[in-house]
Image (cartoon, rainbow, N blue to C red; front, side):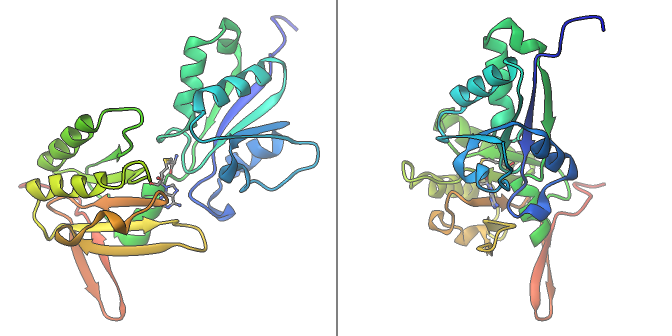
Amino acid sequence: MAGKIAPGKIAVVGLGPGEARFLTPQASAALEEAEALYGYMPYLERVPVREGQQRFASDNREELARAGAALAHAAAGARVAMVSGGDPGVFAMAAAVIEAIETGPAEWRALDLTIVPGITAMLAVAARAGAPLGHDFCAVSLSDNLKPWEVIETRLRLAAQAGFAMAFYNPVSKARPHQLDRAFDVLREELAGTVPVIFGRAVGRPDERMRLVPLANARGHMADMATCIIVGSPETRMVERPGLPALVYTPRRAGDA
Ligand code: SAH
């Protein structure tokens, strides 16, 4: 065989929003194949234990260090899987792994890297509510760990003006209890109070909870860190049904089309 021996493999695997039925067959195969699993503890706990497979759990704030450890392990010849909730490319580990490759030793660039997509939270929430992301939308992390709060406010305001529906990740934390109320205040300056707001908590898990309120009544205490919020666009509508929750949807046409 020509060329050098493959220096190990790393897969960055999306587990979906909760239960195993949301795991794709590709993700299952990548987890099955791995000799070592890396990730934040609550995500690792979702993966069935397999004999002989090592597990390295870490704190949620140590993303770059965790990525470096997993890459070093793969570079030593192991088949490694790094797990993420939802999709690994959405506010999650895929970008941290690639950042570590960008700044790390040259040999990490030669690794066999696969990003395995998963069902991201906003898609799971949207599916429960109807089709609120049926036309143009954007996704915003409300965490100001890695960007200033002013940037977040500007993005919310401009996205509302541009007519996007919006999905919010990381809506609150203990360290920033009032920012979500501030975010809703900004949106109320730009949008009608009747725009539907969907709070989807722990979607796809046994403790799932859905709540639908008009923007006028949306409050920060309605969300926690396990909640993904979808704010409709000016076109988003509700279809009432007898004895069933209303369907929230954003029509496929906008403007005069
Ligand atoms: N990579 C993940 C997102 C990580 S950021 C994904 O693609 O879904 C973490 C945020 O995701 C949480 O604060 C919450 O806003 C959202 N989230 C993750 N799982 C969720 C679930 N099951 N239900 C609702 N929101 C969820």
